[in-house]
Image (cartoon, rainbow, N blue to C red):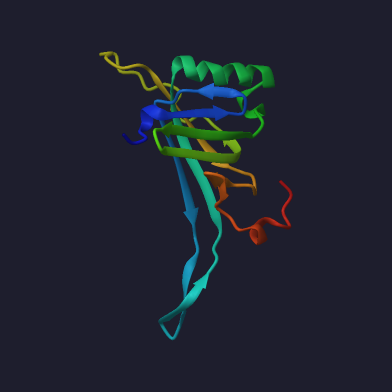
Length: 149
């Protein structure tokens, strides 16, 4: 048996969410260094990470409650988040730091029905702590040592 989307659980700050879909993408602009057109090593590039959650209305309302407590959606602080899945011998823990959420598709209604209403919540990673995968940081210590998190 392998980990599937059904095995993954997500925490956004203190809020436990069940997402219909959850994506996280890392962009690492490191590149090959060349001399006279011939590869001779590499250079570090900038990094960024972003993703999107698709939530049913009941899960979306958990975030809406947090936004109401903050005074507005845009008043929500950046959260630390985690995706975790475990089955038999396989385990995956992805920690995301400084998750800043937005709303993109608040309503996408099909009058024919047949599926639950889903709300899309894109997010960006804003902390230099960035991302850890099973406890291993994506970034080296020397890349973030002078940054305050």
